[in-house]
Image 1 (tube, rainbow, N blue to C red):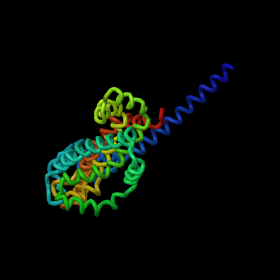
Image 2: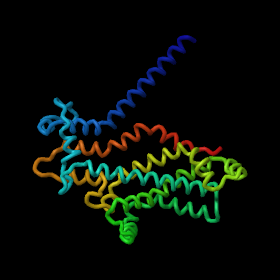
Image 3: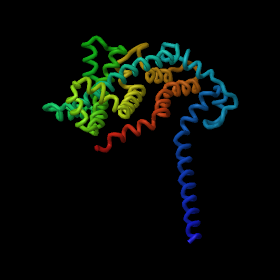
Image 4: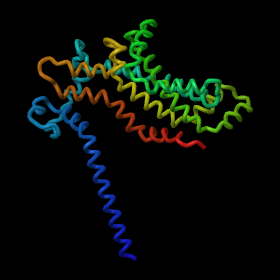
Length: 292
């Protein structure tokens, strides 16, 4: 009996070792492009030419990072990525806030204050989740032109709010379905009105799904290129457009270290968000998975 237990323990230990080894190998393979980018960004151009991609830098220098941030050319503009980085920050902050609040409001109405045709309204919103970006380019462009917002950050904010509203509504609607209707009925009996119930009861319960909505919208908007290149222009463009312009702009020698540094700068905010709040994103997605 004891020998059987020992054999089982050994087999279990061997299985764990195999699983962890495979996970480490897969993680290393997945992270290899990022490692190459980091190594390249801290090498000099001479070292990049004389060594392979995954070799450790003999001397670490952050000159490429400084140039990418302050003086790299993105077309005719040679002021680096800093201005476009802050453009994306000013773009993301109000867009994520407004689309999340509107999504929460829509989800609240569609679940706790149902009206005639609410299911049809939700179905029409849901269709918006499956409309490709390219389909909305022309009607959005005509709308922004009519409003006088073409080529502006404000116009780009409006585009992302409209496009993201179907997703945030879906998130909050599915989450609010799991909240008992009796809670809202009890609040009505106590004299709470429409907005009081929303601000005092529903939103405080919505922390998990708010995290999901914020992370989803943040990554979608920050990483977007198509809307940015179509609906903005000049110095109002987001960082993804600036990165594309930088990589495709070369005068003389191609500076791969600067390109890699700029790419990492553009990706750092989304990496930070997922590292810090990734586990809350998974929790929020599963919070509304089961009713009751």
